[in-house]
Amino acid sequence: MQELAEQLRDRKVQLEGELARLTKPPEQGAGVGFGKRVGDGTTEAVERLATTATARSISASIKEIDVALTKIEAGSYGVCDGCGSQIGAARLEARPATALCVECASAG
Image (cartoon, rainbow, N blue to C red; front, side, top):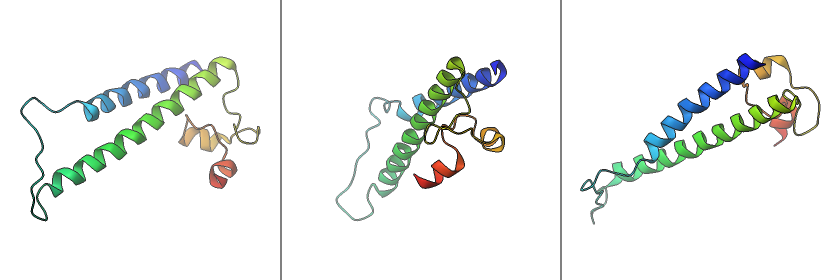
């Protein structure tokens, strides 16, 4: 379990770095301007939407890792938060930070 916890901590550090990069304020003087014509600023707007969605996904992954680390410390890692049954080894291998078994994840 210690090795898994270390892997999760390493992944969390990577994700936090990526989140910091995505949410970094723009350089001073590098403002985004949206013009009055159709198409002006479209690229910037789409990029900002994509960045926001990515940042939310990364934040959710960090929270999942935090929950998994707490469960490891408490000795309840691998137990589904939805139904209380054991999460399958294949699912935990594929998604080590998951808190739900396949059935509960599919239902939600």
